Length: 125
Image (cartoon, rainbow, N blue to C red; front, side):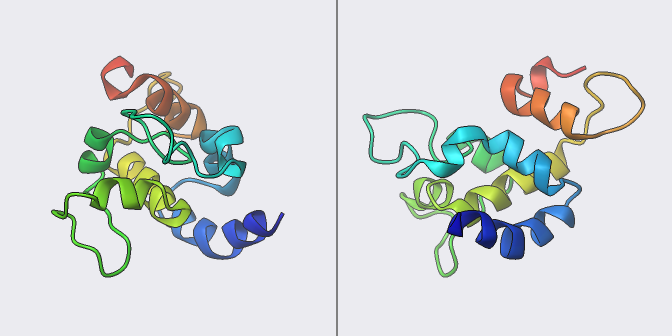
C-alpha cells in the first residue's frame, strides 16, 4: 500500500501532465506494479520493469535515466526501467510521443494507450 501512496503523490502528477491519468497508468502496469524485482533479476529477457519495457521502447521514449545517470551508459536502460519512477516516466514520454487514436473513436485515451502498450504502434490504426 505504501507504493500506491507514493504513486499518487509523486508519479501521478508527472503522468497527468503528459495526458495519462492515474487509473490508466495503473492499468498499463497491471499486477507487475506490486511485484519486485519487476523481472529485473530474472533470466535474460527483452522486457524489464513493472511496465515490461524493451530497450527499443525506452530509446523511443527519449532514453530517460535515473537522476545522475547517463543515457549512453551500458546499464542505463535496465537501471531506469527497473526503477518504478523512471519506468513510469518512460511510459509517459513514449505515450506523449505516440499519441494515436488506435480505435478511431475520435479521441486519444487510455484505450489507445493500452493498445499501443500491448501491441505496439505498428499495430495501431
